[in-house]
Length: 372
Image (cartoon, rainbow, N blue to C red; front, side, top):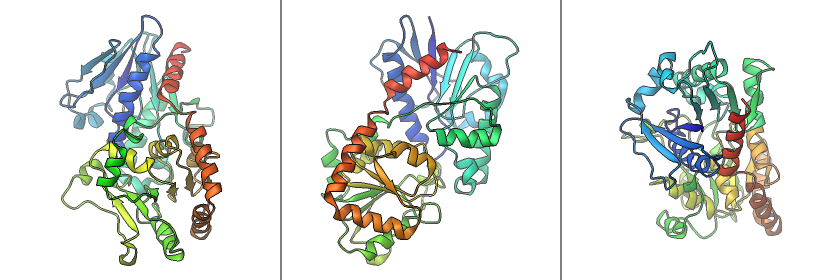
């Protein structure tokens, strides 16, 4: 009998809430796909709210420490001793690990969700990027298996830590909240979204390139409104986002009537905004874990992106790419003028999304640990 423990507490960055929801969904799938006599355990920090699970195969346990303490104490190997002899997985590199001189039955697998800490460290901020790299180094050195959502991220890790570093690709899925719920239409109305619009998670600046989309709107007055979902800027931590003066999207005065800034009250608002769009626009020069992309494709929303290798790998034939502002604006306009092409892309997006599911990820995770 084996129990696969899922670390519920994610690395404390802008995606922390997304990863926490994903860990919950993965835990459900791990229980659903568990081999006979196997089960799942959900490890949550003291003071954190645990989700309600229906499956009797899931056990919830609380750590003796609060989530805010984990980035500090989990850099020490002694904190990993309570997990000796267990199967453990984390969706981010923040995981208690230690060197093991003998085979004690322990198995650890760690997912490195993106490569921003190496490709665009300034985007995260110096301390955040260093902490992410420090946890990744520990995982490379001490974990039994390193996983990534894309081959592109795997190649970055191999470039950093050696070409012979074994990395497996574990395709993830969007959190349930990033999918359209039964109240999606009501949520879109409450957020002030029109019937037809394009959606983006871009933000102002050289990395977010939201200006590319503003330029396209200026060039083509016939383009539908643009919905900009806030909360996807890696430079804004959850703590900063809750502060008195968060860094928000800056919209030019002349475009205010054509741009809707979506400030999600809860994660389900993100799913509602994604699912109602005709096209998703991703001009960013980096790629995150990709939950929003996957959520959009699951709702049959195609993607126009700037060609980052990880984004291109996730989207594949469910969209197009353009790597500079001019061609991006031209493709943006073309897709909305060619309704047949946009409709065909929607079908391809829906088809592409079928390759991403939590049950598929859970099956692979069980298989990975079985093969160790």
